Image (cartoon, rainbow, N blue to C red; front, top):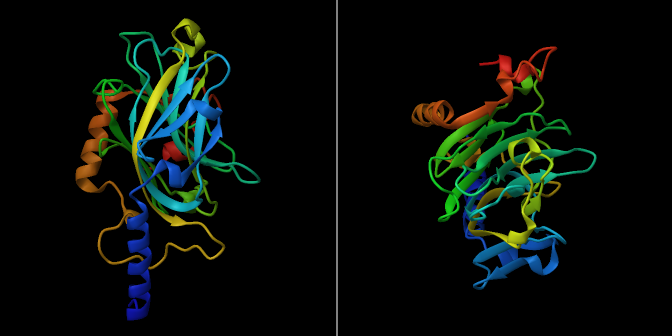
Length: 281
């Protein structure tokens, strides 16, 4: 049984996290690269990232997190976006490299964006799943969510789960659980691979390319040497969130209707056998 003192402490912690969820780009992020190409306007409420021949641009969260639920509204590059990659992800590089990626791969006008998700654990990635969305992500802002807790990683699009990566560490699958990460957003050129395997290059005559971000809401355990996400309140919390039965139905729908690539079915890529997590229920 959780003591009254522990319960109150947990409630204070969650209250702090919920208060911090009303994000402000000026307060919560710094420019990673690109200088003036990363513009924060409207008193910190909106972020514009641009890409030209000289450079792309990026912002990086000032805080480090150990487990988080991060929601971001994004409007992608409109028109011919071939060769561009717009991102929203969590990352920490160094002795340990973990990464949880939303990557939006552009295409020529009239063609669908490809949403790529990927996960790196202890420096090893190659866990791509790709989707076409059920809406045009360039016409308006849409919400994309990364949920990362001790049980699973879930990618949401407009609150619909499109991917779940379960914690199978007890069965030999590495899982990111002990390394702090930052939130990053970026826009950059990847003509060598982003659009149809690199067959279509970026058209620099259309530069600058611009993507827009707003409403960054983060619920998280802010990292410190004493960070802990244990003893959460008994009410429903992102700390213990899983898709559940209804969410699993939505996840199955999204995968069946909109997934166009799954590394767990790519036998040619893994001739010596699919990654271990692909074989687990």
